[in-house]
Image (cartoon, rainbow, N blue to C red; front, side, top):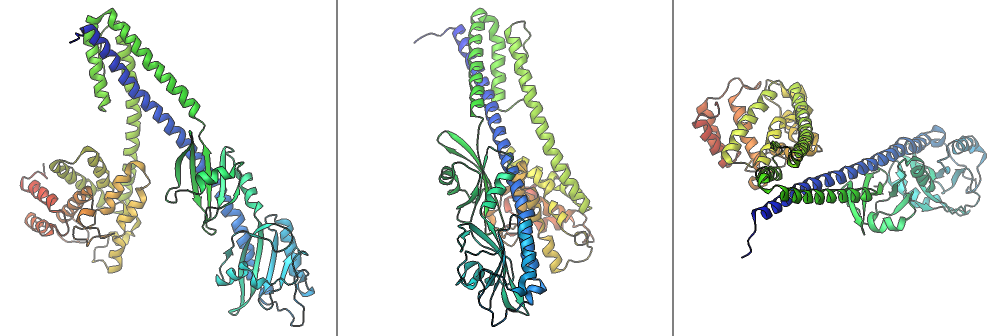
Length: 557
């Protein structure tokens, strides 16, 4: 058996301890930097899409739909009747339509988004178009066209077509916005205007301020309609054809490159805008990774040198550093190294402590933000319902005792604590007259009250650290027998945290004053009610735990 000296062991321990701590902290730093860079790109993508979609809705769509709406309701259009003796009209305008036609010409000249504005007659399929397109065939019959038929099927609503090839010789790809014209319930024709597909590309190019983002407008079949990319085929094959419809942002890797893919839906025919950005921070992260590696190697070599120079004196501070590193690895960031010496280990100890101080400061700021958020939400509950704040505090206290009794893991305890504070936040969305009504609620009012778990869930589900708590408060009025709300879940479908919250909530409701009841139940009556609820409304195991707390007088402790 090979004997290993104490000095050799010290060297190996120092190298291992410092290497492990540096790798651990370096990895965290690397991952945080990568996550921050990705979040920045995601935010840019979302801002890009918001910029374009807001313009799309607020300007182009509004303008186009306004014009179609205006002319479909114009008395001059509704009252216009083509002479029975007049020939079918395709590429010229009759004298009795000249005034309207001149107004349309003014619109098409002043609004560059409009290619053609026209009125198609139901009587014979004639079309009065501004400006006149002399290349249209004389046998053109608007009634046979998909845009006309689709508009009529909409029965008075605005209709947006998918892009199609112009019937004339222009060769343009058009999209039609149209609405049917009725006179006393009788179809007279269809008012429409055409937009060139190039307009969508123009919108994307003009409004795209993050030039490194590839923006695509796609239809419901994920076919590209407009874009600002130089390599459409690449993005279509690798991203657009396989876009995850359940996500609005995802990270995808192609070869060794990473891309951030974000999208937002549009109201036109289930179209959507997609932003795809290639990450450009790999080189910076590689430099960071190299530096971390060099730091780890450098500190390891220094530790070997220190060990050789004074192995006896190093044993004590070394053991301390090893212990501190193990504590940090377990997640205890409040531990500190205390080495009273004038050598490199003292400096290393101070540096290590400074690093932990910085990490602790960041964690403290994060926790303070969490607390501020929950307190703000709790204050909102108090404003809408006078007894709720005290109720939430009491429910939280009871839940903590039940968690202790049931041995709930720490992670679940934190999630349940937040859920207890916020479980009635959805009552903000319930009229105050219903919340504080002293009389018996009507069926309609009770249905309103039953909406508060869903309202509360919708309010906080997007807050990252409250996602699990949102699920808990959503279920806290479900029953074991499936007669609860909002989704009639049964025993095994309900989270254990929600079951605990339900028991605590029920107990406090029976043991405290409420505006809608005249007195508080006696302790004996509360115990009877709890026993009767086991396996029906409430979980039997948790009720037993509460009954034990009541029997031992631990709730008042």
